[in-house]
Image (tube, rainbow, N blue to C red):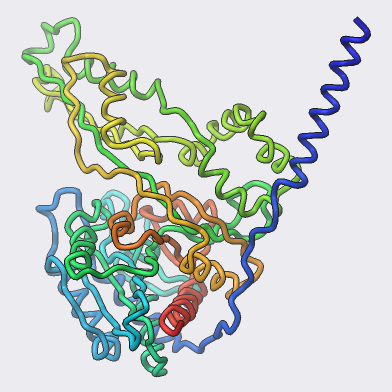
Length: 487
């Protein structure tokens, strides 16, 4: 018995030694050197803020119901851009795609160099009427106050559109030579999937045989205070994104008066189906969290490195801990969210039709079809009809050793070398998903700082951006575009 105990003790000591060794050696410093020659340009702040403020007053809203589309708002925004950025419009070849999306081409002198595409979107989400009195300033006022620019779209995503326009206008005013062609593309319906806008912009390029060295869209950001144990700001660059699908569950029934109900009403059948789906979440995977962690692991506390450096043994424990946090859980699996339901129009009438919508954000490795098949199998009730609405598969994963990724990362660090940079998987959706046929190097990043409080204001009440972030983003794009088009 003593020999067995001694053997177990030695085994535990050896195992502990392996765990500690791996925690100390697995993670290397993967941070790229900051780009040299980053220019701290002087910006006409008053004019830049005035233009951004005006952009936010134009209600370019995307509604799920496309019959509510306000064409005038988008044509007004086009006219605003034309008037606000005259030099850019004088030097660009402008194509209007599907009436409202915009493509600007700045022709390079060296046709052997693949062009670069910078993207954003002009549309914003609606503001609920019941929340209007909760806004500090009216959502479409573009108010500048207290060091902040307020308004719907100030972050998502007129921030990207206007900072790109500002940077390009400055570069043109300085006569910076354009060796490599630059394109700017702004979709008009990203908030409802980009089917009319970005999808047709991608087709516009395909039809002309245009491919890109790299593509950059909105999506990532500089996060602060959002990763436990990390004291430095972290710039996350999206190298992939989840897919999405709305599955519509429909139950038809005879209906009738509520005083003579059947054993199960259409709504009751539907409710049981929803519960079955919610009670059986998709399996988890640490693959994409580990991709991010590998880039910054050397900066993390020992206890975190101990766990993440030994996933061969501790992955069940790590998954269990992360799945208890909804923000972390979203990075580990396909998410399930029952979001809409309808039944009878009156309390004493049995519904003849009950419907519900469940929104899934699809993890790479799954597809729209595999998600639907799984849901049908879980419900296992022929009375519940499952149909697909607004669906896109997950994107491919772009490399982190491409010229584009390294240029973006080095420019970020050139702006502030205290910032760490790491790849990550975007949990929402962007227009970038349509452009993988045009380049394998598709990235998502915004030069904006977010924390646990400010990130909740995106699509929410009091959306706003600090003036300092807005000006820093102009400087960032100025330097990134300059490096892209001159090299």
